[in-house]
Image (tube, rainbow, N blue to C red; front, side, top):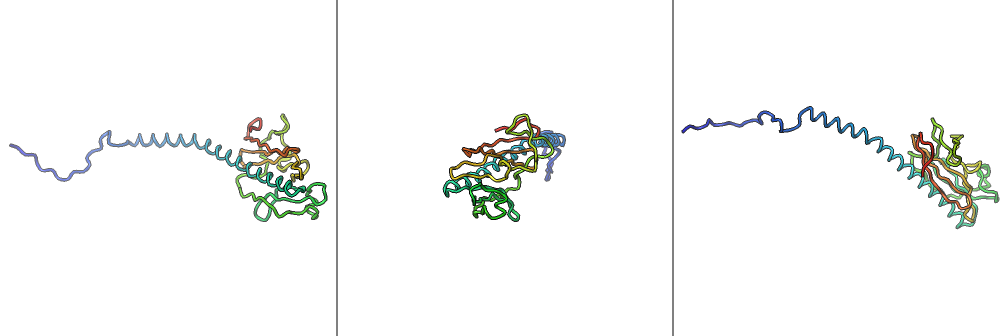
Length: 209
C-alpha cells in the first residue's frame, strides 16, 4: 500500500480562465460604462435645466398672484416690480398714489409708495434675462425676433405690472434665462390677468408650452 506525501499549506494556485475578469474584460467594461455616461449626461443636464426653468416660472407666477390678490382684497391699484435689494433680488408691491397707475418715476418721487410686501427671489440658476449669442424668436409675433435683450421685463413701456382693484392687469411678459441654453416667458394677459408660460431652447424655431 502506498501513501501520498503529506501536503503543506498551499497558495491560491494559478488563476484559471473562469476565476475572474481579465484585464481586457475590465477595460472593456470601463469603456462601455464611460460611453453610457457620456450619452446620458447631456440628457440629464437638459432635464435639470428644464425643471429649473419650470420651477422659476412657478415662483414668478406666485408673485403675480400675490399682487393681484392684494389689489382685490385691499380695493386699490397695486404695482409689482422686480428689484434688487442689497445683495438679493425680490418682487416688491407698490401702491398707486394718484390714480394713474404705478410708475417708476413716481416710485422715485414718493408718490407711489412701497407697501412693505415682497416676494423674495432666492435662486441663482434662473433670473429675468434674454439669451445672448443668438436671435430669439418673439413668442408674440411669429416671424420676428426679440429686440433689446437688456430688457427682460416688459409691460408696455414699463417694467412694472399694475393690477386694478377689479383684478385687471397691465399686459406684458417676463423673460427668464438660465444663462445657458434655456429660456422661459411668463405672459400676462391684461383684462383677465391670466398667466401663460412658454419655453425656448437655443436653436429652436419657436417657443413651446
